[in-house]
Image 1 (cartoon, rainbow, N blue to C red):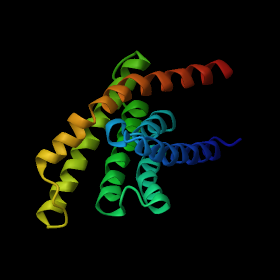
Image 2 (tube, rainbow, N blue to C red; image 1 turned 180 degrees about the horizontal axis):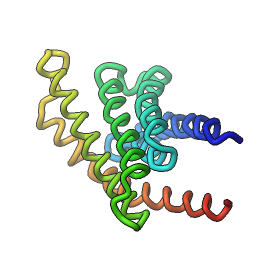
Image 3 (cartoon, rainbow, N blue to C red; image 1 turned 60 degrees about the vertical axis):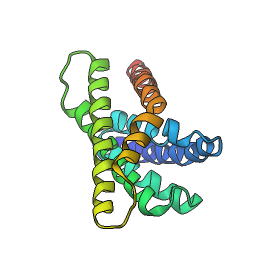
Image 4 (spheres, rainbow, N blue to C red; image 1 turned 180 degrees about the vertical axis):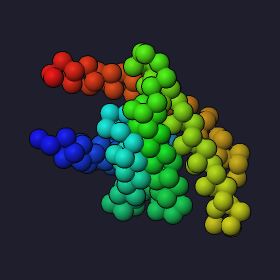
Length: 177
């Protein structure tokens, strides 16, 4: 199969995984704690590259919102869409274009952590802009609490699980070639 077509199909799969994971975690009351949409976006960016990670991050919250009416399209799904687009963009860009270390796993961690920090900054800035424009009542303390305190288990799991998944898939792919 053509590599480009394969990446497009896999991008669709990652979007579908994000759309399916979100209601599963949210129905158990664990969505905000574990941030289930973040995992497929980060893995997609790292494995397929920045373009596909960007598309996955941008579309997953919007499709979930349109299909399930959760998260609400505005402002939550819109803001999440920007945050996750940055996750996908930077994880793919840094990992695939800026190898700082000879160790692949070290490069995965650098790309992952930079993408996670930048995405959260974009999330905060976007809500800040909406707040200034009077389109959101989301206070800065709520932002910090939701992304860094309530979401801490999700952050830890992303740092533990995403690199393991990426390295396992890359090893399997290298073995098959």
